[in-house]
Each structure stands twice: as C-alpha cells, then as structure tokens.
Length: 462
Image 1 (cartoon, rainbow, N blue to C red):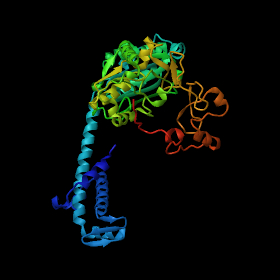
Image 2 (cartoon, one colour):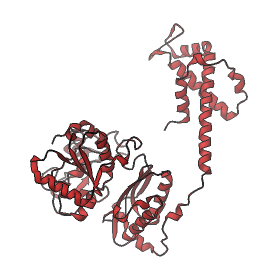
Image 3 (cartoon, rainbow, N blue to C red):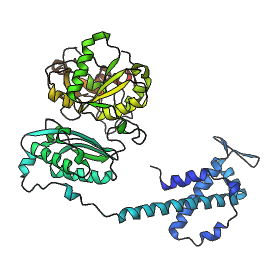
Image 4 (cartoon, rainbow, N blue to C red):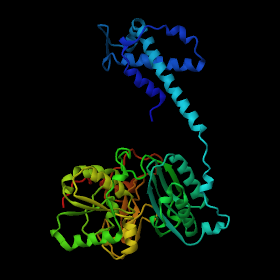
C-alpha cells in the first residue's frame, strides 16, 4: 500500500517549477510545531534528492545550468547554492500536499470511529445446551461453502467468522472479501450443524440454503489450525472483482442437467467437435480424478486460468463449454472470464461442483478421486484409479508431499517405491534430498524437474 510519504513524493515529481509563486517559507517554518517541522524537513530532503536525480545524465554524471558534474558532492553544492529558491518552492508544494493527505486520513479515521459499533455476539449461536465434549468429540465432517454477495464491511464479517469458528471449535480456512465469502471448515457434526444455522440466519448470508453447504467425512483434524482473513478475492484468480464481476458467470446446471449434457457429449464420441467439457482445476487435481473426455489444462494454480484462456481462444471459439470444478466457486469467476472474451457460443457450469454431482451420481461420469485442500488430500466415491505411480507406473492415487526440504510439490509414489526410498517428487529433488541439511531459510524460488519441465501456460488442442 502506498504510504503518505510516497504520495507526497509522487506529487512532487509532477510539479512544474515555473508555475510556483515566490514564497518565503523559511519565515513560515518558524511558526510550525515540532511535529510539522519534522514533516517539512522530510519534504525538503525528498525534494532536494528528487531535484538532483532529475539532473542525472548517467550513473556518475549530472548536467545542470550548462555545467557537467562528476561527483555527487559537487552537484549537491551547486543545487544548494544556485537553486535554493526552487527547492523552497517545491518543498512548500510537497508539504501542502502532505498536510492535505494527513488531514484526509485523520477525517476518515474519525468518521470510522464515529460509526455505531456492531455487536457480532448476536450472530453467534447459543451453545449453553451443548457440552464441550459434543463440540470436541463425536462424528465429524468437513464443510465446503461459498457465497457471492456484496459486503460493505469485510473486516466485521472476518471478526464474526473467527469468533464463530472458535466458539464451535472448528478448524479450516475462510476467505472474506467485498465480493463475499469462501471457506472450508471441519469439526463435529454438532458444531458444523450450528455453523450452518448461524450462516443461514445471518442478515447477509440468509440467501444461503442448507444444500449450498457441501459435506464430506472428516473433522477438525483435517486442518492444522483456523485461518480467517480478508482478501481482494474470495478465490484467487488474479483479476480485480471490480473489473470482472461474478454476476457475469455462465448458466448454472443442476447435477442432473449436467449429467445429461455429459452423456450426450460422450454418446457422440470423437465426432463431437462443438462442445468442450472443461476442468477448471489445477493439474494435480485433475490427475487423480476427472470427467471422461474432458479438457484438463496443465496449470499449477487458478491464477493462471485467465492466461490459459487468452492463449487458447481459438480452442473455445464457437463452442459450447461445460465447466466444472470442486465446489463451483472457481467456475463462477472462470466462466465470467471466458464469457468476457465473446468467443464461446454458450457457457455452462456445474452447480455445486463435483461435490454435488458425486452426491447424486457416485458411479457417474466422474471417475477417480476428488482432490480436496486439506490434510486428507482426496476423497472418493468410486474405486477407480486413473493415475499412476511417478516411479513404477503402477496404479496409484494417494498424494504425499515431496520429502525434500522446502519443496511443496505433491508426489504420487506407491508404497513399494516409497519403501525403496523414492519419496521425492522427481529425481532432481530426490538427489537434493539425500545431501541436504536442514535450513531455517527457504530458497527464494522452488526449482526442480516438476516446475522446470512444465510450461506455465500450456497451449492445448482438442
């Protein structure tokens, strides 16, 4: 975020010396308080430095008033003696800009403190009839949820979510932004039931229904801790929500409707060239589970999806696109971005994502496991294994983290290969792991065969 000092300096750069009126600021400075004198001194230092920098011709040469200076001390003396009036005038203007900014910040802060505080305790359910054991022990589950809606005060919602989850002893991750909320939390079924009720009774989120919460077997142990924060986007695509709204998303299809569309696509076989079944997830997700005959981009994170679309526009031109992701949230922004390119005939998305589809069609057209972003890594509804071991190519779909220090890649290494010492994501990491020593400082950039051999943005063809 730009500081007040940066703003003042930026204003300085754009000031035209010739437009300034003569002003005896030395006399006025005597009237300033100690704090303001510090601000003025700062402005003068920045003004002087910027003025000198504007005269630089090369790294060690400055040109001013028809003269050439090859030492910094020389140009400093020249500016101090010859351009004293200019420096004072520029300092005055910069100082006035700085004071104006300080005044605005103070007014804004005063207005925010004058707002009537909201009591978030009224949004937290009464648990007096619930024992601590019911919130800590017993059958558990993991919730997956999101809701796109305008939030005027995301910090307030963040505080409420943190207090709510702590009260119910839930763990997980919750992202809050002005565009809504996205989260996955785990705890006992008693706790998650109270969480759903609290969400559905909230004055903003009461547009949500119980079926909007995707559930799976698990609990608080599926997450290391609780993380609740305010972000620019509730799903990180890297596109400003103000520039691309979720309201532009594609047409939502219920699982039954999506199932019929996929069935029709598969029935045409290779002769179908007017429809694309698009997986919006990352490559490591689609590797262990996907819809039959889908297009699964080989991208590492969702923030690469816009670039992928841009580089493959001809692939989608005049096509009907059926999009899907884990719970539906990535399709909201992803379909909006695809539609903004005006190349597709139609854009549809699976409502509720793979989660909701598997609830109705556990033996449907989605085969393999469903990747989840918690300690479980994956959940399954059918016994198919569509991926294989990194080292021996035997069927395998159970991810573990690369054993090399600081490498965050996921690796598919079967039990036999792991027993044989193949615990890294690639041979390069395996070699590094054998001789590495523990270090408290991570490398600036993760480098291994996995990252080096895969293009950041692939170009695909049907």
